[in-house]
Image (cartoon, rainbow, N blue to C red; front, side, top):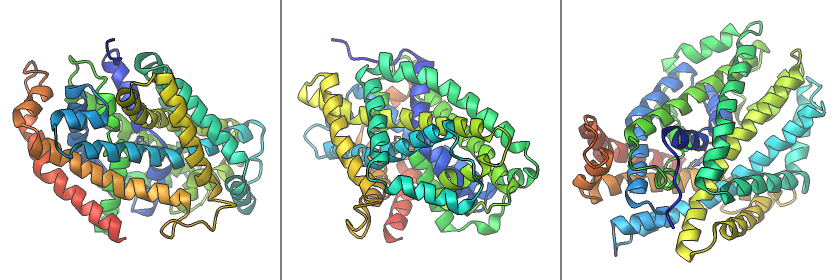
Amino acid sequence: MKRDEFSGFFGVLVATVGSAVGLGNLWRFPYLVGQNGGAAFILIYLAFVLVICLPIMISEFIIGRRTQANTVKAFQMLAPRTPWGAVGIVGVVAAFCILAFYTVVGGWTMDYIFRSVIHVFSTPDASAIESQFAALVTSPIRPIFWTILFILLSALIVMSGIKKGIEKYSRIMMPFLFFMVVILMIRSVTLPGAEKGILFLVKPDFSKINTQVALAALGQAFFSLSLGMGCMITYGSYIPKRENLTKLAFTTAMSDTLFAILAGLAIMPAVFSFGISPQEGPGLVFIVLPRIFAQIPLGNIFAVMFYLILFIAAITSSISLLEVVTAYITEKLKMKRKTAVAIISALVAVCASFSSLSQGVLQHVKIFGKSIFDFFDYLSANILLPLGGLSIVLFVGWYIKKSTVYDEFTNQGTLKGTLFRAYYFLIRYVAPVAIAAVFVDLIVR
Ligand code: TRP
């Protein structure tokens, strides 16, 4: 049977942008910008996306499309009888760990949608909203119910395959997502006093920049573009041979960045308009924004829109993580897709339930001094992703034959490949050094 693939440029793009645009853009990016000097952080972030992450995304596409296999087999095919396959395994494990906390936050977004619909956010009182949030995350039942529903929906999409599942649903959801975030942005920038928020996003304060901030920007770029664990290798394996990988990677990276900035513009002006500090941190979207929704006219409608955006962004990322594991299991164990997805989702549901409970009744259970939730987060984002990213650039830059890389970069010589030398230089020298720096920093912190 012919292996499933995406239908064409737009089909691939909605899927890769769907994977990239996620909680990273809407939740992590705005609060990092808030804590790290606004526009200056954005400029550094942009530079990293172009110089380091774009070449890595092209490399992941190259590994995937060359082999048309799941991430473990891809490494084994390009490096037979070597331990390189382990990089693929680490990727599969990372996907699993990210899913174990990502789906919990996905569940929270569903609870927030539900509560916005039934008009619960009607108080601007900060401590009331904070205790509502605490009540949700510490409850032993409510968040698990939503998390399991979230996993179930992701599973249904992935069960339907690449073209008829992931691509089909991304085609519907992604344009809607961009449309809604633009509406929200317009609302936010027209609030009284919004200028201060806009200024914060466009006027760089370079005095805030130091190595810590730079490294935070690189780590964020990695996470936001879904790099370092074979997500883009797996999606890359479904890219038709005729598509231009550089163009795809460039468009994906730019769309993701555009979305992050739109999200910033949808959030920061509103935050400033209500005189709240931009440095609120992780509680920004779940604690600060409800206070704002309670105070603007038609706030409940905007609240529903916002949490719907958060939900869509999260689920299109979650399916890309699920697909990494699914592709591996179906191809390795010759299992039917539906069976594989069912088994994997059940396992994810168990791990996610534990990570959800670790916010409440299992609070005292610590792994290396961290709650289960934080452990999955830390292990994946701070250890497995940088490790995977470093391995991938070393693999493409130093292990695979240059002619093989060139061949895939230029679609067997049919594209001009003008940028190949720049790409190869970045992947060989610049990216490994930069990732190693982030890695060391993340470990010692
Ligand atoms: N990029 C997504 C976000 O911004 C999350 C994500 C999906 C991810 N797949 C990934 C992160 C793979 C790292 C690796 O929310």
